[in-house]
Image (cartoon, rainbow, N blue to C red; front, side, top):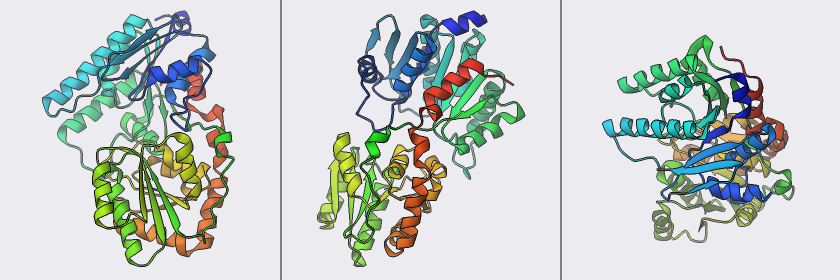
Length: 399
């Protein structure tokens, strides 16, 4: 594809999740998508197209067939990931890669951003053979360190490394852990790797002052999917143990999920309704009100979950709250001076981390101050996804 075409043809965005059409309708009216506290990546993609003066095309997974075409953007839904195993799993990866490639070709896009989790990277090689520039947006570590890969996983890594060296035009990454894995995979001829930060509006967090550590109960905040792999029952056990040892604590569980009723039953059967509140899904203002009452934010994701850049970790720092999480969460390395690191999958480690903050006001103040030194980077559009993607398509060099 000629250089002139690359600069004038549409830009494509393959989203891994989210209501992209809903975000677009708000963006088109000059409104932010207030269903999320952070700027959505799809909204930033629309900003990228506007800044580049180019049309856009996007796809997203949905159980309902949806589409819009208005001259500036073409957005289509695609079928969601199928929960299958064995040979069917690999066939589904191929199906998704084929659908995405066909959709890119029919839109005429020349630059293509693909979120990780849609398909294996190497399956995008045929699309690159057509002259398209393929950029990866990687938000989740590629593998869990310390886990021995299977023979099939080793083969997939080898093929992904081939794609990275030969056909990938660049990678946008959410953490150094992801960058290190990409570099180790592709070797010295890895594609350009650029970091981005999640983006927030400073006005949303001006209301927050550091919590008073001596106020009781000591309030613990969780926001996310109510699932076993997200560590909600580890947090439940940690708080139950604290209460059994006479600690005056309270936890707010915020979010929806498959284990919501099971968690409610566990709280009720333990007769802990006065010390554990289960709120379900909340709108953004209500969620921020609860965060404002909190002393600490806990993100207890388990090792069984492929954690991406958990934005709750970032939002804790923006709200001037210390955060407790483990190394399984890539966001930890971005906010380490504001965090207490717990051992992954260890209930007693999370309980001990909470007790450290309760018992040591100096440590608590130190973590709040550590967060204050980090906050501004997450308000800076120049460090966000759209700006970094623009830099990449404007002047990237491939090894």
